[in-house]
Length: 95
Image 1 (tube, rainbow, N blue to C red):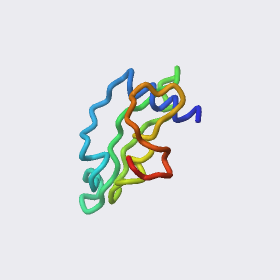
Image 2 (spheres, rainbow, N blue to C red):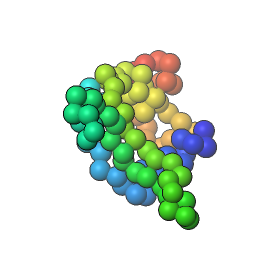
Image 3 (cartoon, rainbow, N blue to C red):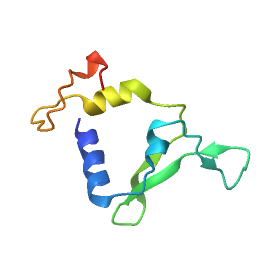
Image 4 (cartoon, one colour):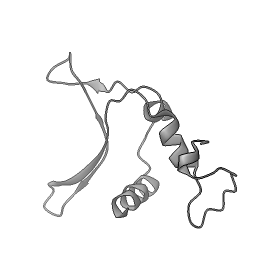
C-alpha cells in the first residue's frame, strides 16, 4: 500500500506526460533503439539517488488492455472519498 501511495504522489506532484490511450487502450510500447523489431516500455519518471544512480523508475510497459478490472478499482469508493460517484466496491465491477 505504501508503494501505491508513493507512486500516486510522484505522479500527482511531478505530472509526467501520459496519454490516456496508452494507459487504458492497447499499448504496444516504443521501438527499441538497439533492436527495431522489439518493443519496450516508456519510462515516465526516473528517481535518482544522491550519487546520481537510478533509485527506481516508473515505466509504462506494453500491454493488451486493462479494461474493467482497472476501471473498477479506479472508480471504487475509498476511505475519505468525497466524489459521490455511487459505485460499489471494486468487486461489483461497475467502474
